Image 1 (tube, rainbow, N blue to C red):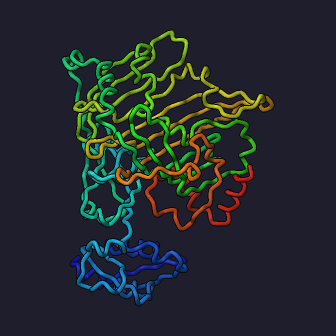
Image 2: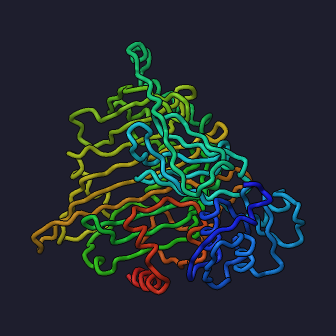
Image 3: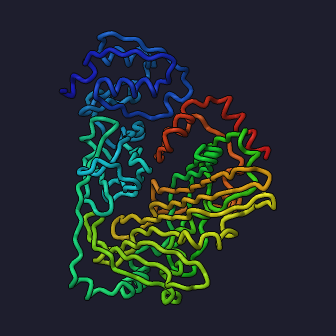
Length: 497
């Protein structure tokens, strides 16, 4: 479609009681074009009804945006809404950037051969500090600035070749990305010449080279949930501003500021909870294994573990060692087991998957329960963790942390037991390395705070404008259905507890 004809293209569209933002999204889907504008322009506007049969986009836009101080410019398939002081022939330049908002891209990443979704795959702009990860169903949502219109999105997953798509070529807001397997078989000669313990010790020795030695600011999406018998009781999510200290040995404390948050309680089920599960924001920060080395990375405790170089795979088009570790048998204390992914060229640890052995979990009960009751018997069933790091211009930054825990709970007065599951997850969506701000203590939330008890104020104008990980479908539908009055009831109920 020629640039000069975008506004003259005729479409038919029918919408009722929607915001101007939603109307523009609907027009975008029907016409295969994109809108860029300052999102503050329409925040206070009332919802509109839109009924049009075979009318030009120009006519429809002027009907829903009658403000004569605003005009419509075109660039490729983009329609830019800007003040009239910009001349029609002016294209998207730095002068227009302040009036350009964001482009939302949603999609799913899957294995090309088996057609299976790829959970926790990395999505980011090449060489930039903007990105996210997919959820358990391989879905992602990324909001990028119009400044990135000429950049390239990179999709990565362990064992697969990268897929790269220029932002300017993404014509649909929902895309499907297939990745091809890029597995490298491990030859026996490599096994004989590569000692996993030596690799890990070298990786720890290279921390000062591979990870930032100056503080950074992270913008992260955080969510946590509690389920009882596979039904949600608590679901909360927030955008966090994090002051991330450097990876020097003495820089241990990070500071967390809650930018926006929201939560849902199933009040009818809360009275059955007689204990609190550890995790939350503190759990996510503690999963940064480069910041505070766990036993399986600490040379002082490595003698308690068995290590095996299992494979050589790939990530981000680089070869990586896959090292499995597990505790030596007959130890008195339960220890973690799992996998490490270490780049072969610079020995940077880029990912770890680990958890406690199932048959030793009952010995660890008190590690995961904050508040208990004599009336209940709690037995851990699953304790699993994931952490990954993202390479940006040669340095590795915290990208994603995830904890999944499951417990069987039996009340002495009841015949049947219940299964409780909790998860806490944090994904970095933006990293700032210059002009880093160290937040004041009074602005921050203590990482050990039980986030579901944290008092927040729901901002309905905010949600949907930031990068986020899609929650599972059932809770996603709940978030769509819930209206403002229901939110206030839920929030009021949770804050009174």
